[in-house]
Image (tube, rainbow, N blue to C red; front, side, top):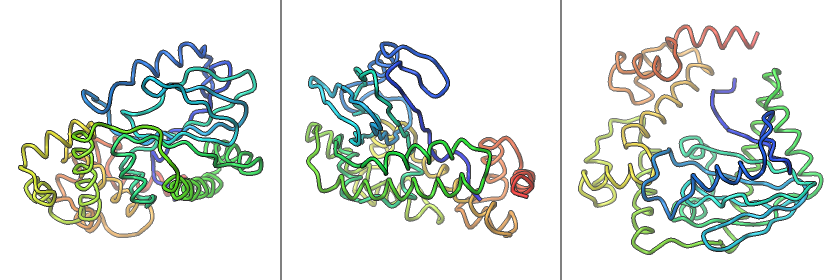
Length: 295
C-alpha cells in the first residue's frame, strides 16, 4: 500500500500551463524568481529536491548571473535555495518538475556524494532520457494521477528507481554552481546531522546528542539546522517518525502501541497528538479507511 504525500509533480508546457491551471510563462518565471535567493540565507520553507526533466523541446534557466540551456532528455537537479529559475520554454516544450521533500528523499538511498554536493549548493545538469525513457516518464506521471492504486504503486516504484539511477549518473558529472566555503561547511554539518537523525530516529534522540555528533554546541546546531533546512531538528525528526509509523500502520498488523514506540515516539499520547495533527484522524480510523480503499 502506498503511503501518503510522496511526490509533487508538475507538467509545464510552452504556454506556461501547470497541471490543469493555465498560467503564462512570464508568471511562472516571476514566481520562480521571487522564491530564489543567494544561497540558503533567510529561506523559510522546508528544504526539498527539485528535478526538472525536459521531455520535449528546449528551455532556458537562470542560475545566479548565468543562463543555462537544456534540451529534450536533459535535466537540472538542485535543492531549494539553489534552484535555477525557469526563464523560457520553446513552443514545443514539455517540462516535468518533481519536488521531493528531504524526508522522502532519504528513503530513496540516493548516492551520498551527490546528495552532499546538493546540500552544499551545487546544481547538476545532464542528459538522462532517450525517447523511450521520456515516454515511460510521461506514462508514470499519468499513472500517479490515476485512481487505480495498484498501477499508482507500480509507477511510484519505477519513478523512485529512476531517481536513484539519476543520482548515480549525476554524481559522476560536473556541477554548475558552488557556494561560499564558509556556508558550504555549514551545509556539510547539517547534512551530517540529517544522516545521523535518519539512521537513529527510531531511538531516543536529544539535541545534545545530535549536536555532539557533529561537534557543535546545541544552540548553534539548532540555529544552523533551522536556517538551512527550513524546519527545526524536532520537526525533521518527527517527520521521519510519523512517516515510518504510517508505513507500519498500512503495511503491517502491528498494534498502535507497538507502532508508536517502534517509530521512536516517547509516549502513546505524543504519537496520537502528532498523528492527528498530520493526518487529521486517529491511527485506527486512518488504517481502517486506507485498508477499505484497497478492497
